[in-house]
Length: 91
Image (cartoon, rainbow, N blue to C red; front, side, top):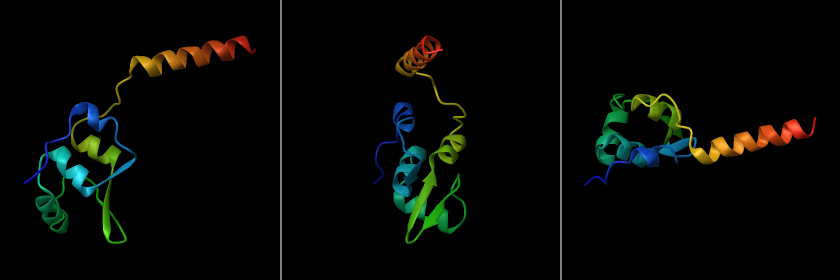
């Protein structure tokens, strides 16, 4: 049985690379199906084998899901504005 698919918000909180189970959740398939797809070279995005484990670059996962840009959240925008103001004051 597969876990609930990742939400849109969860996808944006992922690290640079995720395990195959997380990528499978994003596509809404079971881990068994994901392994089968990898072995048949049919997984919908890049999969990298690291030793005995598989890792999926988050950017490849997001592109396969049709997510091409990261959203800007208000906290990051405010931090950027404050950084710009601080830089301007030190000139």
